[in-house]
Every structure is written in structure tokens, then in C-alpha cells.
Image 1: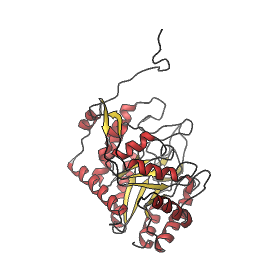
Image 2 (image 1 turned 180 degrees about the vertical axis):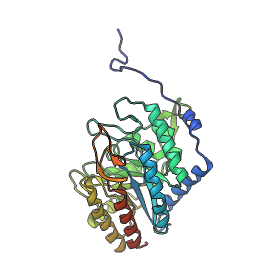
Image 3 (image 1 turned 135 degrees about the horizontal axis):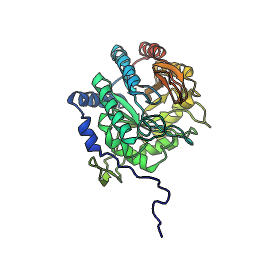
Image 4 (image 1 turned 90 degrees about the horizontal axis):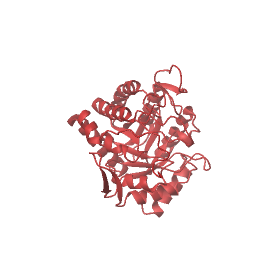
Length: 346
């Protein structure tokens, strides 16, 4: 009697990471952009660089053409504020779903439930390579624990999301990633979970994964010293970007003998998913930095070419999010300039 794969409808071959890397290589120029971005982020987190890091870009990538246009518009803005801010383009390919829904460019690049994952991986790697060629470091969430093997060498900053911060395998993954990693507080607002994740991610682990050739293997990590908490608000705690919430999070880190370094997510629970309220969050960060805050090292802003959001299905408006609502680019540029002008160096 058959007992295996009773609920598996179909098995499709998955391309090996090494083959994809050969098709879409990491150039010397892109490697320099990635490495410099990582080093700059590490310096900011370690307080050796007085700038503020800002991870800014679409909630999710569904149209690589619009993402490239966004990057081309973001690059001159990044250059203009480079003395005060380090801009990292948010390039999210995977979307965790509370129940069901579109799972992101990698899983469903055609936006129609066809799940051409090999195509999605190729699009993701090519987009990261193209944005690096434009001269911007990129940041993305690592949701599937094997997908990083296909493109992690092109990523400057990584994230472990609110739904996976408590996951042991994601903490182990963060311990082996080659870039700084932000770990969000849980969806209900619990920050201690993220602090515990930092402790785990800073340690060595062994866990099963894939090699670049696609073979199963056990990876041994050395631990990641550049993980940090991302405050994103919560369903029970409410927003957690104001001075008392920042002080409370910093105290939790101090209690764990961890560096007091935080990123404030201006979206999600901190904005109630109202993109206009991201401006209020940034204003609060400006006030805290001008008041002498040393714990906030970075910000995250959800932004696209066109503000707001739209539902999948039918003709899509170019440059507008299909997941969470975003600030439009013009509003984002004005906000970034104001942040650069007003934030006081540490």
C-alpha cells in the first residue's frame, strides 16, 4: 500500500543555484557595490559611521521593469543624500501570507497561480544584478530557507520577517548569511522574540540545506554579528516607534548583553498600513535623533513609483504596489531630503 506523497499532485525540477549563477553572473562591478554596501551598513550598525541607513522601495516586486525604473530614480537621490544617509533599495521577492494570497515574484512571477518558480528565481537574480549595476545596494526578506542560495551574494541587507522571527530554521539561516540582517518583532508586537532571535543568530549552528550545486548538505555557520531588531509595531502592542517604545526595546537588548541598535519600520503596524502615516513615523525618528538618540541606526520606508495599492486581476497600473500600499516616489524623495536635512549626526 502506498504511503508516500499522498498529497503531492506534481513534482517539477528545480534549477541548481550554480547553473543560475552561471547564466546570471556576479560581475566585479556588482560585487563591489554589494561589498561596499554591506561594509557601510556594518559601520553604521557599529556606530563607526554617523549616517542613518534607509531601506526604501516597494512592498513587493511584481514588475521588474517598474523596479528598474524605481532604481534609476533612486540612484541620484541616494547620491544627493550620501553624506547623511545610506540608501538601500528594498527588493522583496517573497510575501508571507497570513492565510492565502499571492506569494511573490519568485513563487508566482506571472501573477496567475501558475507558479513558474524557476522563472521567478531567474527574474529575481537578474533584477538584483541589474540594480547592483545601477550602483545601489539591495535588501530583501529571506522567507524560503533555500532560495538564498540562488541570489544571496547580490544582497546587501537581509530581513527575517515578523512571522518567522520565532522560527528556529530562520534564526539558523540568519546566522550564516553574509550580510547584516534585521529581525522584526512578532506580528503581535512582542520584541523579546526578536531579541531572542538575535542571540540565536549570533551563535554557530548546523542545519540541512542545499549546496550551490543543488545537493543536500549540512551547513555549519559561524554566527552573524550584525543582526539587529526591526520595530514594526504589532496587532496587540500598537505602534512602537516613539521614544518610550525605542527605549524599552533598547533595554531588552541591554538585558541580553546585545548591542543597542534598532531599525524603525515606518510601515506595517507602525503606520496601520496607511502609507501617509509613514511620514509621521519618520518625523518621530527625526525628533529622537535630534534629541540625541543613539539606538536608532536605520529606517525602512515602503515606496513605489505610484502611491497606494491595487488588487491583482485585470489591467494593472504601472508602478503601483499589488500588496501593501506605498508612498509615491515624489513624496518619498521629499521625505528623504527632509530626513537628510534634519537628522542630527550621532
